[in-house]
Length: 197
Figure 1: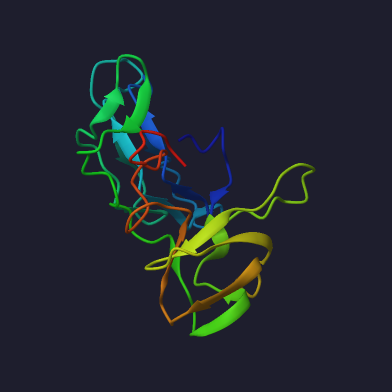
Figure 2 (figure 1 turned 90 degrees about the vertical axis):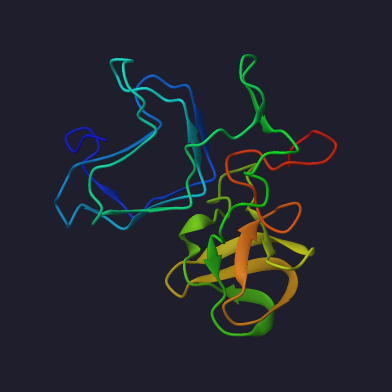
């Protein structure tokens, strides 16, 4: 939140997190106005609920100090119906309105099939970064149950290289692995068994 502490905040993707009952804000975006070092951040599909400011005196869930640098989309500050707030179980109860409530992370660019999927914004996805023991995200297209793991990302050409073939239409939504009809808001994907993905 402070330009002197984090001087180059650009092109970040802050999505599908849960911030609950923190003292010192849920999500705080900087008031930096330097368009060279601070731009292109997207905050999407998060649950931020009952967070306080640094003094602990006022609700401070979502604070966007620079609307030119930060795009806030489909975040929720309303009661999410956690399983047990007192025990810090922040999974969603079956009646939660956060279930299936995420908007797509990005969309496909052009119709096609295969293992090379071009997307509008690859910034949401992780391919392991060549870290030993790490593997890429598992993605799922909207309206489909088949999934694929990301092996590598060509960020220049905006291509996700996958471990198995998919078929897609132009502008089809791309999510991480989900249950139901869409990803849930927040960090935990609801399952009818009470668990999480």
